[in-house]
Image: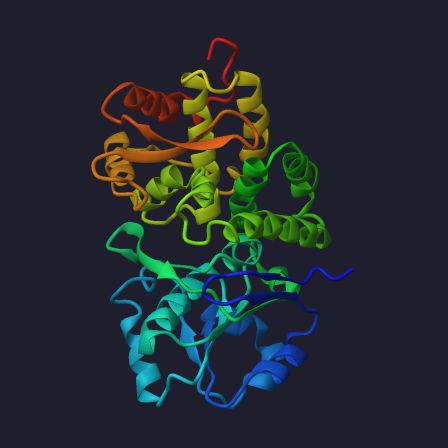
Length: 363
């Protein structure tokens, strides 16, 4: 049964295709004038199967890092494109993970006021989440994803063979990110990630079902709130706290793992506010803990964490906006007073909870 589907967008409808042979796909898709922008690691690891279609092309090979995903970092890429005679009727072709995607999306949406682009996501995080939805985000200084807009690709091609060369921490990061969709969706999706997520490192074949489920959950919301004005904001669950962790650790914690810590912080605060019971928080934590062994948190400077939380792009005025939960499938947006009682909960979390295990019934 085909896993392919299309996403309806106010900008343009775009197709998501699961492919088994990227060579055939590139041969069919590449056009004269296309400029291919590829992650350096992907270029090195997969060149044997890409070379037949990409050899002889003037590629732009990216060192895909958070530092390059910045206003200054993208300038050399734009300079190369213009220097090669790139025109408005040409296309960009991105081959890489989320950082490559962000860079190409931002450039495609901006250069000549917008050019078409297609995407071959190569990381689990990109295949299971960011490839759809159209968000383009780049960093400013140490602050994550402050600059951006919406500009989806024309086509997305998911090749699971790219996942075979990923280190465990990148697989785990992808699972951590995808997990927020399963929690936001409800009990059935929670059970899927609970039962299947633990098998991925031993059996990569189970990952296709998780990717499709994650994308379908996201698709349903994106199609009714593409520009993040209402229900799509619930997918920020875990992200405000996760982005703060990324910022203060200088991105030493991979995004999806930071988000998994962020979800646990959101659930912890939800317990403290009487929104969920301890039992549910611990059920969710049992899944999130799977992701932490790969990248344990060191000591956290709570002042720096709160300062980073204040800089989150989702805030309004001086208010810190976060997503908390009343249960599986019952996330909601609220304001958190980080100068009041919530500051004590955050202190307590980092002192006692990251390594301290589950809450007891007393909270």
